[in-house]
Length: 233
Image: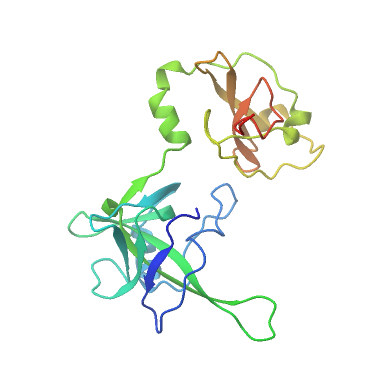
């Protein structure tokens, strides 16, 4: 989430936007994120649909996407270069059947004699037609649906906190987990919905711990604790 920074922010005066949208948010957490102080969302939250928090990237026709004050607003809040990543949580469909998502970001300003810079948060709305989903676990499931099988093996739940949870087989991204060392887990706390054998005959198993709240992702069974399997030799 660090490529192609923001072009322009048009809030008050222009600051350099130094952080990507939704960096503070995690879908696996108990609470579902919602924007703070977004008037349109506050008024229409019952019309918004939770989308699951998948990641998308800017993919506008003019090489950028616009963050609007609210759906169909004429006020531009910010512009983002194509390739900028967002986490899409809430969807709103307007009267013309155009789907929008709300995005929260911040501007950052250094304060003299202060250790940390001051952050000013803001939010706005982007058309989903200007975003392109980033290949992820759900994309992998859709692509390899016929290759997935039931996992018949066994994994000791006491060592699950030591394992690496990859976003999907072949991905270089590791999912964040909230497992604690020697955390007691009952059998019903862990599910292994399916297994996948890749083109090199290596087995992967998809795992969810604590209904996906403590950890979820793909475990590489041949070397489950190795987080360097995709680094060059």
